[in-house]
Length: 456
Image (tube, rainbow, N blue to C red; front, side, top):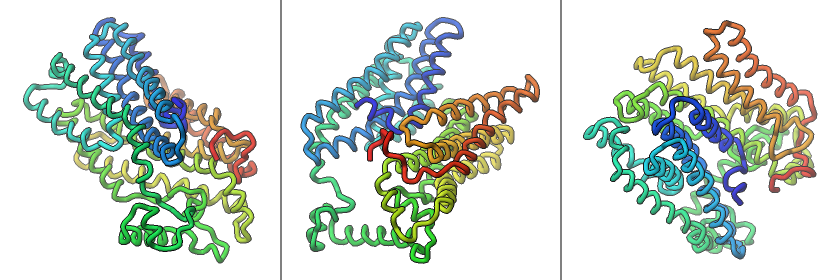
Protein backbone atom coordinates (compact mmCIF):
# COMPACT_ATOMS: atom_id res chain seq x y z
CA UNK A 1 0.00 0.00 0.00
CA UNK A 2 2.91 2.37 0.67
CA UNK A 3 4.05 1.59 -2.89
CA UNK A 4 0.61 2.57 -4.21
CA UNK A 5 0.56 5.83 -2.22
CA UNK A 6 4.07 7.00 -3.10
CA UNK A 7 5.68 5.13 -5.99
CA UNK A 8 2.93 4.39 -8.53
CA UNK A 9 3.56 6.71 -11.52
CA UNK A 10 7.10 7.25 -10.26
CA UNK A 11 8.26 10.27 -12.29
CA UNK A 12 7.47 13.01 -9.75
CA UNK A 13 8.43 10.95 -6.64
CA UNK A 14 11.79 10.15 -8.27
CA UNK A 15 12.43 13.84 -8.88
CA UNK A 16 11.47 14.75 -5.31
CA UNK A 17 13.73 12.00 -4.04
CA UNK A 18 16.70 13.89 -5.51
CA UNK A 19 16.40 16.22 -2.52
CA UNK A 20 17.29 13.28 -0.29
CA UNK A 21 20.47 12.85 -2.32
CA UNK A 22 21.26 16.54 -1.80
CA UNK A 23 20.51 16.10 1.90
CA UNK A 24 22.95 13.18 2.13
CA UNK A 25 25.61 15.24 0.33
CA UNK A 26 25.01 18.14 2.71
CA UNK A 27 25.32 15.81 5.71
CA UNK A 28 28.66 14.53 4.51
CA UNK A 29 30.24 17.88 3.68
CA UNK A 30 30.87 21.19 5.41
CA UNK A 31 31.59 21.90 9.03
CA UNK A 32 29.81 19.88 11.69
CA UNK A 33 27.30 21.74 13.81
CA UNK A 34 23.65 22.78 14.09
CA UNK A 35 23.77 24.62 10.76
CA UNK A 36 24.62 21.49 8.81
CA UNK A 37 21.99 19.47 10.69
CA UNK A 38 19.28 22.05 9.92
CA UNK A 39 20.30 22.06 6.26
CA UNK A 40 19.76 18.29 6.21
CA UNK A 41 16.32 18.82 7.79
CA UNK A 42 15.35 21.51 5.26
CA UNK A 43 16.36 19.38 2.27
CA UNK A 44 14.36 16.45 3.71
CA UNK A 45 11.29 18.61 4.48
CA UNK A 46 10.86 19.73 0.85
CA UNK A 47 10.27 16.22 -0.61
CA UNK A 48 8.27 15.27 2.51
CA UNK A 49 5.77 18.01 1.64
CA UNK A 50 5.51 16.93 -2.00
CA UNK A 51 5.28 13.21 -1.28
CA UNK A 52 2.65 13.76 1.42
CA UNK A 53 0.57 15.77 -1.05
CA UNK A 54 0.81 12.92 -3.59
CA UNK A 55 -0.03 10.33 -0.93
CA UNK A 56 -3.04 12.36 0.27
CA UNK A 57 -4.50 12.71 -3.22
CA UNK A 58 -4.21 8.99 -3.84
CA UNK A 59 -5.43 8.16 -0.35
CA UNK A 60 -8.65 10.08 -0.98
CA UNK A 61 -9.16 8.37 -4.33
CA UNK A 62 -8.50 4.86 -3.04
CA UNK A 63 -10.60 5.34 0.10
CA UNK A 64 -13.53 6.69 -1.92
CA UNK A 65 -13.38 3.80 -4.38
CA UNK A 66 -13.07 1.20 -1.62
CA UNK A 67 -15.90 2.79 0.34
CA UNK A 68 -18.20 2.86 -2.70
CA UNK A 69 -17.42 -0.81 -3.44
CA UNK A 70 -17.72 -1.88 0.20
CA UNK A 71 -14.20 -3.33 0.42
CA UNK A 72 -13.76 -4.73 3.95
CA UNK A 73 -11.03 -3.49 6.32
CA UNK A 74 -9.69 -0.98 3.83
CA UNK A 75 -9.64 1.74 6.51
CA UNK A 76 -7.24 -0.28 8.66
CA UNK A 77 -5.02 -1.00 5.67
CA UNK A 78 -4.84 2.66 4.67
CA UNK A 79 -4.12 3.80 8.22
CA UNK A 80 -1.25 1.34 8.48
CA UNK A 81 0.12 2.80 5.24
CA UNK A 82 -0.28 6.32 6.63
CA UNK A 83 1.76 5.42 9.70
CA UNK A 84 4.47 3.92 7.50
CA UNK A 85 4.53 7.08 5.35
CA UNK A 86 4.91 9.26 8.47
CA UNK A 87 7.76 7.16 9.81
CA UNK A 88 9.51 7.10 6.43
CA UNK A 89 9.17 10.79 5.56
CA UNK A 90 9.26 12.46 8.99
CA UNK A 91 10.61 10.27 11.80
CA UNK A 92 13.56 8.73 9.96
CA UNK A 93 14.87 12.03 8.47
CA UNK A 94 14.45 13.66 11.91
CA UNK A 95 16.71 11.05 13.50
CA UNK A 96 19.32 11.65 10.79
CA UNK A 97 19.10 15.43 11.24
CA UNK A 98 19.65 15.31 15.00
CA UNK A 99 22.48 12.85 14.41
CA UNK A 100 24.10 15.71 12.47
CA UNK A 101 23.71 18.04 15.50
CA UNK A 102 20.45 19.73 14.43
CA UNK A 103 18.35 21.10 17.34
CA UNK A 104 15.72 18.43 17.90
CA UNK A 105 12.87 20.94 18.27
CA UNK A 106 13.77 22.95 15.16
CA UNK A 107 14.25 19.83 13.03
CA UNK A 108 10.94 18.41 14.24
CA UNK A 109 9.13 21.66 13.43
CA UNK A 110 10.60 21.72 9.91
CA UNK A 111 9.87 18.10 9.04
CA UNK A 112 6.47 17.79 10.71
CA UNK A 113 5.41 21.20 9.43
CA UNK A 114 6.48 20.46 5.86
CA UNK A 115 4.77 17.08 5.77
CA UNK A 116 1.60 18.48 7.36
CA UNK A 117 1.55 21.30 4.79
CA UNK A 118 1.68 18.68 2.05
CA UNK A 119 -1.36 16.88 3.47
CA UNK A 120 -3.27 20.18 3.58
CA UNK A 121 -2.46 21.07 -0.03
CA UNK A 122 -5.12 18.58 -1.13
CA UNK A 123 -8.53 19.90 -0.13
CA UNK A 124 -7.36 22.78 2.10
CA UNK A 125 -4.87 24.60 -0.08
CA UNK A 126 -6.43 27.92 0.93
CA UNK A 127 -5.11 27.37 4.45
CA UNK A 128 -1.57 26.94 3.13
CA UNK A 129 -2.03 30.05 0.95
CA UNK A 130 -2.81 32.09 4.08
CA UNK A 131 0.76 31.48 5.23
CA UNK A 132 2.07 33.84 2.52
CA UNK A 133 0.67 37.09 4.02
CA UNK A 134 1.55 35.76 7.48
CA UNK A 135 5.21 35.46 6.40
CA UNK A 136 5.08 39.01 5.05
CA UNK A 137 3.82 40.31 8.38
CA UNK A 138 6.40 38.38 10.38
CA UNK A 139 9.23 39.60 8.16
CA UNK A 140 8.06 43.18 8.43
CA UNK A 141 7.80 43.04 12.22
CA UNK A 142 10.65 40.75 13.27
CA UNK A 143 13.19 40.64 10.45
CA UNK A 144 14.47 37.72 8.32
CA UNK A 145 12.82 34.28 8.68
CA UNK A 146 15.91 32.64 10.19
CA UNK A 147 15.47 34.88 13.23
CA UNK A 148 11.83 34.35 14.14
CA UNK A 149 11.69 30.73 12.94
CA UNK A 150 14.23 29.92 15.67
CA UNK A 151 11.86 30.94 18.47
CA UNK A 152 10.99 27.83 20.57
CA UNK A 153 7.45 29.12 21.18
CA UNK A 154 6.83 29.38 17.43
CA UNK A 155 8.34 25.95 16.84
CA UNK A 156 6.04 24.42 19.45
CA UNK A 157 3.09 26.18 17.79
CA UNK A 158 4.09 24.75 14.39
CA UNK A 159 4.36 21.26 15.84
CA UNK A 160 0.95 21.55 17.55
CA UNK A 161 -0.76 22.78 14.39
CA UNK A 162 0.98 20.13 12.28
CA UNK A 163 -0.11 17.34 14.63
CA UNK A 164 -3.69 18.61 14.32
CA UNK A 165 -3.32 18.45 10.52
CA UNK A 166 -1.97 14.92 10.80
CA UNK A 167 -4.94 13.93 12.98
CA UNK A 168 -7.24 15.17 10.21
CA UNK A 169 -5.14 13.21 7.72
CA UNK A 170 -5.47 10.00 9.74
CA UNK A 171 -9.25 10.41 9.75
CA UNK A 172 -9.45 10.75 5.95
CA UNK A 173 -10.00 7.03 5.17
CA UNK A 174 -12.98 6.82 7.52
CA UNK A 175 -14.42 10.14 6.30
CA UNK A 176 -14.12 9.09 2.67
CA UNK A 177 -15.77 5.75 3.48
CA UNK A 178 -18.78 7.62 4.87
CA UNK A 179 -18.86 10.12 1.99
CA UNK A 180 -18.36 7.57 -0.78
CA UNK A 181 -22.09 6.96 -1.43
CA UNK A 182 -22.66 10.71 -2.00
CA UNK A 183 -19.71 11.37 -4.32
CA UNK A 184 -20.77 12.61 -7.74
CA UNK A 185 -20.66 10.02 -10.51
CA UNK A 186 -19.47 11.54 -13.78
CA UNK A 187 -20.90 8.83 -16.02
CA UNK A 188 -23.80 6.78 -14.66
CA UNK A 189 -24.69 4.86 -17.83
CA UNK A 190 -23.50 1.63 -16.23
CA UNK A 191 -26.57 1.79 -13.99
CA UNK A 192 -28.81 1.80 -17.09
CA UNK A 193 -30.81 4.81 -15.93
CA UNK A 194 -33.93 5.20 -18.05
CA UNK A 195 -34.92 8.81 -17.33
CA UNK A 196 -33.42 12.19 -16.48
CA UNK A 197 -34.72 11.81 -12.93
CA UNK A 198 -32.80 8.56 -12.54
CA UNK A 199 -29.66 10.24 -13.90
CA UNK A 200 -30.07 13.11 -11.43
CA UNK A 201 -30.32 10.64 -8.55
CA UNK A 202 -27.35 8.61 -9.77
CA UNK A 203 -25.01 11.58 -10.30
CA UNK A 204 -26.04 13.65 -7.25
CA UNK A 205 -26.45 16.67 -9.55
CA UNK A 206 -29.34 19.08 -9.95
CA UNK A 207 -31.08 19.04 -13.36
CA UNK A 208 -29.42 22.30 -14.54
CA UNK A 209 -26.01 21.04 -13.43
CA UNK A 210 -26.56 17.74 -15.21
CA UNK A 211 -27.64 19.52 -18.41
CA UNK A 212 -24.55 21.77 -18.32
CA UNK A 213 -22.30 18.79 -17.63
CA UNK A 214 -23.75 16.85 -20.57
CA UNK A 215 -23.41 19.88 -22.86
CA UNK A 216 -19.70 20.24 -22.05
CA UNK A 217 -19.12 16.51 -22.51
CA UNK A 218 -20.94 16.57 -25.86
CA UNK A 219 -18.75 19.47 -27.04
CA UNK A 220 -15.58 17.63 -26.03
CA UNK A 221 -16.65 14.43 -27.76
CA UNK A 222 -17.85 16.27 -30.87
CA UNK A 223 -14.54 18.09 -31.22
CA UNK A 224 -12.54 14.92 -30.65
CA UNK A 225 -14.37 12.75 -33.19
CA UNK A 226 -14.62 15.44 -35.87
CA UNK A 227 -13.34 13.95 -39.12
CA UNK A 228 -13.39 10.33 -37.92
CA UNK A 229 -16.07 9.46 -40.46
CA UNK A 230 -13.71 10.59 -43.23
CA UNK A 231 -10.89 8.45 -41.85
CA UNK A 232 -8.92 11.30 -40.22
CA UNK A 233 -8.36 10.92 -36.49
CA UNK A 234 -7.10 13.93 -34.53
CA UNK A 235 -4.79 13.97 -31.53
CA UNK A 236 -7.78 15.00 -29.40
CA UNK A 237 -9.59 11.90 -30.63
CA UNK A 238 -6.64 9.70 -29.71
CA UNK A 239 -6.59 11.28 -26.23
CA UNK A 240 -10.32 10.68 -25.84
CA UNK A 241 -9.91 7.05 -26.88
CA UNK A 242 -7.17 6.52 -24.27
CA UNK A 243 -9.05 8.44 -21.59
CA UNK A 244 -7.05 11.64 -20.98
CA UNK A 245 -7.25 15.30 -21.98
CA UNK A 246 -4.59 16.74 -24.28
CA UNK A 247 -5.70 20.37 -24.29
CA UNK A 248 -4.33 23.36 -22.41
CA UNK A 249 -6.04 25.02 -19.43
CA UNK A 250 -5.20 28.60 -20.38
CA UNK A 251 -6.76 30.03 -17.25
CA UNK A 252 -4.44 27.88 -15.13
CA UNK A 253 -1.49 28.96 -17.29
CA UNK A 254 -2.29 32.60 -16.60
CA UNK A 255 -2.69 32.02 -12.87
CA UNK A 256 0.57 30.06 -12.63
CA UNK A 257 2.43 32.76 -14.58
CA UNK A 258 1.12 35.46 -12.26
CA UNK A 259 2.04 33.42 -9.19
CA UNK A 260 5.55 32.90 -10.55
CA UNK A 261 6.07 36.65 -10.96
CA UNK A 262 4.63 37.24 -7.47
CA UNK A 263 7.03 34.67 -5.99
CA UNK A 264 10.05 36.42 -7.54
CA UNK A 265 8.70 39.77 -6.32
CA UNK A 266 8.43 38.40 -2.80
CA UNK A 267 12.00 37.13 -2.98
CA UNK A 268 13.27 40.52 -4.17
CA UNK A 269 11.58 42.20 -1.21
CA UNK A 270 12.94 39.72 1.31
CA UNK A 271 9.67 37.89 1.98
CA UNK A 272 10.62 34.55 0.43
CA UNK A 273 14.18 33.19 0.78
CA UNK A 274 15.55 36.61 -0.28
CA UNK A 275 17.07 34.84 -3.30
CA UNK A 276 15.09 35.71 -6.48
CA UNK A 277 17.54 33.71 -8.60
CA UNK A 278 16.81 30.54 -6.63
CA UNK A 279 13.06 31.18 -6.90
CA UNK A 280 13.41 31.59 -10.66
CA UNK A 281 15.35 28.32 -10.92
CA UNK A 282 12.61 26.56 -8.92
CA UNK A 283 9.99 28.05 -11.26
CA UNK A 284 11.89 26.72 -14.28
CA UNK A 285 12.14 23.27 -12.72
CA UNK A 286 8.45 23.39 -11.77
CA UNK A 287 7.33 24.15 -15.33
CA UNK A 288 9.56 21.39 -16.63
CA UNK A 289 8.15 18.89 -14.14
CA UNK A 290 4.62 19.96 -15.08
CA UNK A 291 5.34 18.99 -18.68
CA UNK A 292 6.88 15.73 -17.45
CA UNK A 293 3.78 14.91 -15.38
CA UNK A 294 1.46 15.45 -18.35
CA UNK A 295 3.56 13.19 -20.55
CA UNK A 296 3.61 10.64 -17.72
CA UNK A 297 -0.21 10.71 -17.83
CA UNK A 298 -0.11 9.66 -21.49
CA UNK A 299 2.21 6.75 -20.67
CA UNK A 300 0.06 5.59 -17.77
CA UNK A 301 -3.17 5.76 -19.79
CA UNK A 302 -1.47 3.88 -22.61
CA UNK A 303 -0.36 1.16 -20.17
CA UNK A 304 -3.77 0.92 -18.55
CA UNK A 305 -5.96 0.70 -21.67
CA UNK A 306 -4.58 -2.31 -23.55
CA UNK A 307 -8.04 -3.86 -23.96
CA UNK A 308 -9.55 -0.61 -25.23
CA UNK A 309 -6.67 -0.19 -27.69
CA UNK A 310 -7.37 -3.66 -29.07
CA UNK A 311 -10.99 -2.66 -29.69
CA UNK A 312 -9.93 0.56 -31.38
CA UNK A 313 -7.77 -1.42 -33.81
CA UNK A 314 -10.85 -3.38 -34.90
CA UNK A 315 -12.73 -0.29 -36.06
CA UNK A 316 -12.89 -0.01 -39.88
CA UNK A 317 -11.53 3.55 -40.08
CA UNK A 318 -8.74 3.24 -37.54
CA UNK A 319 -5.56 4.83 -38.98
CA UNK A 320 -2.37 2.97 -39.75
CA UNK A 321 0.43 2.57 -37.22
CA UNK A 322 2.48 5.33 -38.87
CA UNK A 323 -0.47 7.69 -38.58
CA UNK A 324 -0.95 6.74 -34.92
CA UNK A 325 2.75 7.37 -34.38
CA UNK A 326 2.32 10.87 -35.82
CA UNK A 327 -0.70 11.44 -33.57
CA UNK A 328 1.39 10.57 -30.53
CA UNK A 329 3.98 13.14 -31.63
CA UNK A 330 1.32 15.84 -32.00
CA UNK A 331 -0.18 14.91 -28.63
CA UNK A 332 3.27 15.05 -27.05
CA UNK A 333 3.59 18.65 -28.20
CA UNK A 334 0.04 19.62 -27.20
CA UNK A 335 0.33 18.50 -23.59
CA UNK A 336 3.54 20.53 -23.07
CA UNK A 337 2.30 23.80 -24.57
CA UNK A 338 0.89 25.13 -21.30
CA UNK A 339 4.11 24.62 -19.34
CA UNK A 340 6.20 26.17 -22.12
CA UNK A 341 3.96 29.22 -22.45
CA UNK A 342 3.96 29.72 -18.68
CA UNK A 343 7.77 29.67 -18.56
CA UNK A 344 8.08 32.03 -21.55
CA UNK A 345 5.60 34.49 -19.99
CA UNK A 346 7.36 34.51 -16.61
CA UNK A 347 10.83 34.84 -18.16
CA UNK A 348 9.74 37.61 -20.53
CA UNK A 349 8.21 39.64 -17.69
CA UNK A 350 11.24 39.21 -15.44
CA UNK A 351 13.64 40.09 -18.28
CA UNK A 352 11.55 43.14 -19.14
CA UNK A 353 11.71 44.29 -15.52
CA UNK A 354 15.45 43.47 -15.47
CA UNK A 355 14.96 41.26 -12.42
CA UNK A 356 16.94 38.43 -14.01
CA UNK A 357 19.92 38.45 -16.34
CA UNK A 358 19.83 36.99 -19.86
CA UNK A 359 22.32 34.35 -18.69
CA UNK A 360 19.87 33.24 -15.97
CA UNK A 361 17.07 33.04 -18.53
CA UNK A 362 19.41 31.00 -20.77
CA UNK A 363 20.03 28.46 -18.03
CA UNK A 364 16.34 28.47 -17.18
CA UNK A 365 15.64 27.50 -20.78
CA UNK A 366 18.24 24.75 -20.40
CA UNK A 367 16.38 23.28 -17.41
CA UNK A 368 12.99 23.42 -19.15
CA UNK A 369 14.26 21.97 -22.44
CA UNK A 370 16.22 19.18 -20.72
CA UNK A 371 13.18 18.17 -18.67
CA UNK A 372 10.98 18.26 -21.77
CA UNK A 373 13.44 16.05 -23.65
CA UNK A 374 13.43 13.57 -20.76
CA UNK A 375 9.62 13.52 -20.92
CA UNK A 376 9.67 12.91 -24.69
CA UNK A 377 12.23 10.14 -24.28
CA UNK A 378 10.07 8.52 -21.61
CA UNK A 379 7.13 8.25 -24.01
CA UNK A 380 9.21 7.26 -27.04
CA UNK A 381 11.05 4.48 -25.22
CA UNK A 382 7.78 3.13 -23.80
CA UNK A 383 6.02 3.05 -27.19
CA UNK A 384 9.03 1.55 -28.93
CA UNK A 385 9.64 -1.22 -26.39
CA UNK A 386 8.49 -4.80 -26.78
CA UNK A 387 6.71 -4.81 -23.42
CA UNK A 388 4.87 -2.28 -21.29
CA UNK A 389 6.80 -2.17 -18.03
CA UNK A 390 5.97 -0.39 -14.81
CA UNK A 391 9.61 0.67 -14.39
CA UNK A 392 11.31 1.68 -17.65
CA UNK A 393 14.99 1.36 -16.70
CA UNK A 394 16.16 3.01 -19.90
CA UNK A 395 14.02 6.09 -19.16
CA UNK A 396 15.56 6.35 -15.67
CA UNK A 397 19.05 6.14 -17.19
CA UNK A 398 18.13 8.87 -19.68
CA UNK A 399 16.92 11.09 -16.83
CA UNK A 400 20.14 10.60 -14.89
CA UNK A 401 22.21 11.36 -17.98
CA UNK A 402 20.18 14.52 -18.56
CA UNK A 403 20.83 15.72 -14.99
CA UNK A 404 24.55 15.01 -15.45
CA UNK A 405 24.54 16.79 -18.80
CA UNK A 406 22.87 19.91 -17.40
CA UNK A 407 25.39 20.08 -14.56
CA UNK A 408 28.34 19.67 -16.95
CA UNK A 409 26.96 22.24 -19.39
CA UNK A 410 26.28 24.86 -16.73
CA UNK A 411 29.33 24.44 -14.52
CA UNK A 412 31.85 23.01 -16.98
CA UNK A 413 32.66 26.29 -18.76
CA UNK A 414 35.68 27.10 -16.51
CA UNK A 415 37.03 23.61 -17.18
CA UNK A 416 37.02 23.99 -20.94
CA UNK A 417 34.66 23.61 -23.92
CA UNK A 418 35.02 19.83 -23.89
CA UNK A 419 33.02 19.56 -20.68
CA UNK A 420 30.18 21.67 -22.05
CA UNK A 421 30.16 19.59 -25.23
CA UNK A 422 29.99 16.42 -23.12
CA UNK A 423 27.08 17.89 -21.18
CA UNK A 424 25.16 18.72 -24.35
CA UNK A 425 25.86 15.23 -25.70
CA UNK A 426 24.60 13.62 -22.47
CA UNK A 427 21.27 15.41 -22.95
CA UNK A 428 20.82 15.18 -26.72
CA UNK A 429 22.23 11.79 -27.74
CA UNK A 430 19.95 9.65 -25.47
CA UNK A 431 16.98 11.69 -26.68
CA UNK A 432 17.95 11.07 -30.30
CA UNK A 433 18.34 7.34 -29.67
CA UNK A 434 14.92 7.25 -27.98
CA UNK A 435 13.33 8.95 -30.97
CA UNK A 436 14.98 6.52 -33.39
CA UNK A 437 13.65 3.62 -31.31
CA UNK A 438 10.17 5.14 -31.49
CA UNK A 439 10.46 5.94 -35.20
CA UNK A 440 11.80 2.68 -36.58
CA UNK A 441 10.70 -0.05 -34.19
CA UNK A 442 7.14 -1.42 -34.37
CA UNK A 443 4.74 0.77 -32.40
CA UNK A 444 3.49 -1.05 -29.32
CA UNK A 445 -0.20 -0.36 -29.85
CA UNK A 446 -2.02 -1.94 -28.16
CA UNK A 447 0.24 -2.13 -25.13
CA UNK A 448 1.52 -5.64 -24.51
CA UNK A 449 -0.53 -6.90 -21.53
CA UNK A 450 1.34 -10.15 -20.95
CA UNK A 451 4.20 -8.87 -18.85
CA UNK A 452 2.64 -5.57 -17.90
CA UNK A 453 2.21 -4.91 -14.17
CA UNK A 454 0.09 -1.80 -14.53
CA UNK A 455 -3.60 -2.14 -13.76
CA UNK A 456 -5.94 -2.65 -16.69
